[in-house]
Length: 238
Image (cartoon, rainbow, N blue to C red; front, top):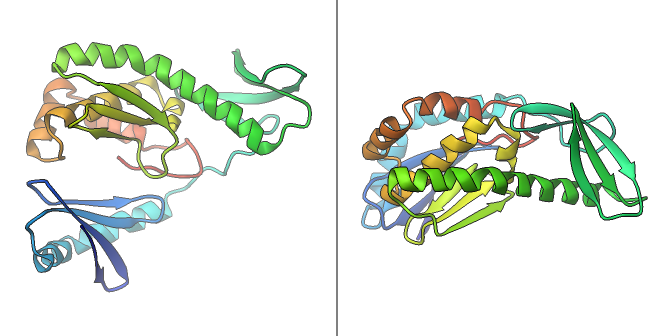
């Protein structure tokens, strides 16, 4: 069930779900405010809660909107791209052969057919990032399945607009944003643990934080690194 409340010039989207605790988030890139509330909670109570958090909401939105963002990628010669936190300069080779991406020292080599458009170049690079992420994520998921005693039934890797990842606790599905492949590898491991722990605790409550402390004591450091630029022209927060 969806509702909307207004706090002056700030619109707050309210979603009633089958959860126990109320959850507030401010989402990039535009600072959209969202509240997830238990099914039986009246909208007036949600409004009072939102008002009590108004100062924090304004600070979070201000910080997000002022965040410096990297310019959009155009897939051109000498353009910077990142893989696992390392910077590469793009070199483009046009050949009549299947497109591919390869690495050589500090260079990302994009091979495409002559006359390939920017959209086509982006599609090739995006698919390469998806493959890199899947290769790195698979052994990490296996490692943490045994440690956490949970099972990931399916992994989805895709471009996501406002989130680094998500989890469907009931089905054991985990989704990862392809852009995580641009971050240091320890950020990926943090994200995987974060999402897998949602199978044990669906919300970001005190128990969830306790589990993060137990299994990954440095999780706050990893989260800060995850949310630092550069990554793309869109800024995610987690």
